[in-house]
Length: 396
Image 1 (cartoon, rainbow, N blue to C red):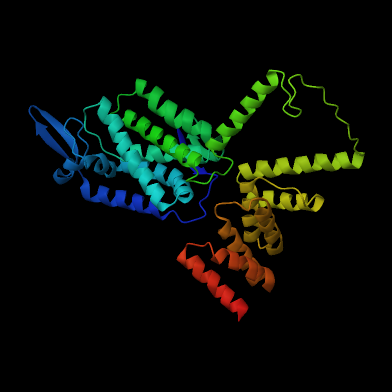
Image 2 (image 1 turned 90 degrees about the horizontal axis):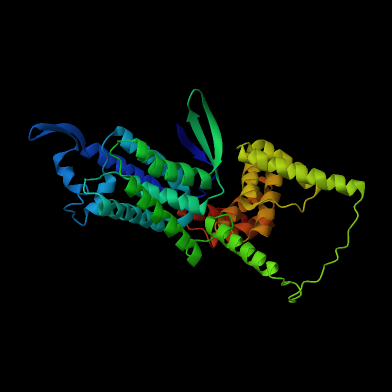
């Protein structure tokens, strides 16, 4: 048994839409769920819903238009609602944060509709549950955060945790095994085809949003990975034909590389830098940010020009702030802004820097600079008010 318990991606804004969807699903479950037995001819059938709610299930043989949405808010049991809402919480928070509240709501409802269509084409039995919509959200997650790490709880003969790449865990376990292989050995009345349709919708929609620029690419998403693979493929094809892209000549000339000799001290320093960077990555992937931040400070003492990957650097800056290393945290945030100024939530980093310089480091100039920049982009009313209050206090 494999159960994802957390991901390495943390939302920077409160995912209100995802929370609202979970609450609505739970409320509707509480008012509509009523297991009871019904006699149909000589047979007694177990029905999960109250009589008034049965009309909101999707009946493919005689569907009504509203049923393609309402079925996704009904559930047939406690395990059903808990399982769906659990996975929606695990993967939905980050997707909500990435694509925004309106976009996330459209993704969820669109996934429900597409999953219903997929089920109706192949089956005539009624269906209910948010599984198709949750599958769409999970499919979008694997496109937006394929290189994130998913911590998985396993129990067979013993219990423990393992970490997997989101790309492989979702594609191989959640999609391929759970919905293609496992149904061959299961007789459960599960709408596997609705799940697959939901995954297809979520993956396709997320790729389209990234390809059209409606959602900002991070450089680590699936669309960026595909583009890098295509560039490498084109380069290999070009060079394999005898074309030198650097000289524009069909017959490539041998390139003479002048070897730069390094002193033992320089080589030792490079080796040490590589070791520290590797250790930082390892500890971050293990979730041990406290140790990773200490190694980062050691790396900065050796060479302050070293730059970590975007998410790693942001995580370490946040950890240093949490540890009370305010000056070191400010340097890390400033390094982040220098190298990743196009970050989609740059105003959050600017706000944090402004607060650091204002409240902890008592440097009025930088505080005003970053708070002013943040106030022009912040959308959260509470954050904007806090930012403007700090500015008024500084400028008084």
